[in-house]
Length: 159
Ligand code: RTP
Ligand code: MG
Image (cartoon, rainbow, N blue to C red; front, side, top):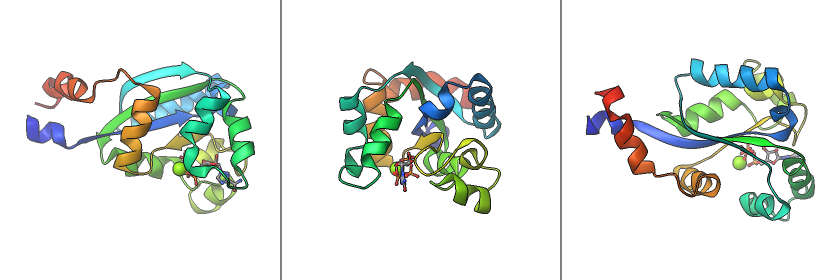
């Protein structure tokens, strides 16, 4: 059981304000996530403050798109999900598609950003890009989320 549980990986997925306010898009994204065999390990809806958004996206401070990104990410409610499956970080980024929706529509039309993003910064979804950022980002949105406890709770499902 321990060996099977180890195959699971966690990542942080966000549904951004451009689409979180559209119930039909939220539903379509949720269904796409389930279809790709992710588990929802945790979910919450929240609105980021200016300080929250600047901290979460700290690595982009100083880049030309930073002010627009912060204004966008604080413009309305978002959904934060802890997503779990094997290879979750890469698989979730694959489902999201390229950062820019226009490029996604050219190169990966089945992806979430191709289908639901608008342009550049307004790209519908976010995903952690490494195990280190996944750990930081899950902790950012779910400070009380106990990763070890979650895996233990899930064990019977994978036995
Ligand atoms: P994310 O972090 O949101 O999952 O997206 P990502 O890794 O694909 O892209 P990243 O380079 O980390 O950029 C973070 C977010 O900033 C906005 N952005 N706008 N106007 C632009 O050229 C531009 N570049 C990045 C996007 O919202 C992007 O997801
Ligand atoms: Mg990123």
